[in-house]
Image (cartoon, rainbow, N blue to C red; front, side):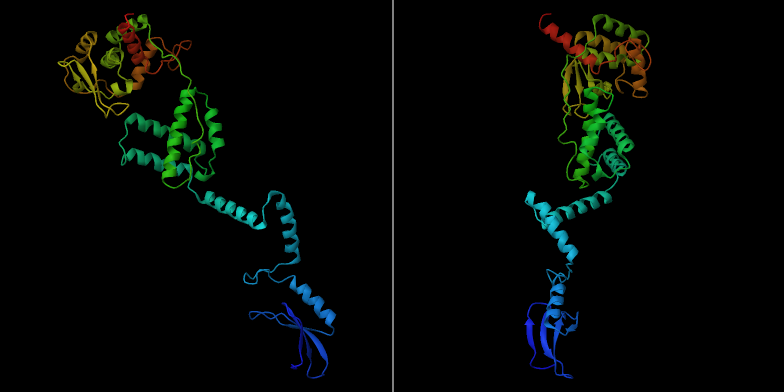
Length: 359
């Protein structure tokens, strides 16, 4: 190549006018060599060489370090997309970053564990009690919630679960506010556990609230209490001590089912509710009034140890007892009302308040 060559186009690809040795004539060379790639293209005229060099320039990378060829099609797409983003004050780079994050989140969802697997782990951990020992009724509630979650959402990935579908499920329950509140509370405990184990970043039920309307507590009439006393004396004696402790001492049913004879101190006239058996996890002493002392003496039958009531089939025995009292239970007394929770405790409190107030 002659030393008389002259660079006409200095930008890449470069165009140089050179003398061909064998003929001594000028030709125009397009030099596309870069990084070990490309070659040389020759044209007879300067016009042809510059035209092709311009065309090739449109196909080279914008950022040569990236090695991305920007074709006319890509350039046209970039212009169209930029025009669409301008009203929102965003750039193609903004849009790309946003979409990449969307794809990353989508991949995380697809790779996250199923709800069924996680509820199994959740319940197993709670049952093992390594962090905190739970009462039997609490474990039963957690197990029921785990079964419900597995049934309705089990095959779903945990990161796919949305607030909207959980709310739809809860609001579709054929139950009162209190029942839906309890279910929501247990579901929320599961999602909090998932968050603590880094399976999710936030609880989908954190901002969903269920307000339980306040209402006057239900109490038993004097006539119903008389019927109750008759039944525990004649037909449901095994529930006698349990029932009178709820009715005449105001002890919660859940606490009473865990109470033992040893907790009843006749000489001191007190019933000790241990913190491990208390709903509030705080110990307390309950005074034994004269009428309750007579009932305790009658139903304890000299026992000094053992549970106040046997827990085997306790729910079944309680349902039979309540049905005999006239409450709606499993097909019996269909036109009657259901047994109100804590009604014995509320009956005690209401009557005690009436006595204190001189009623």
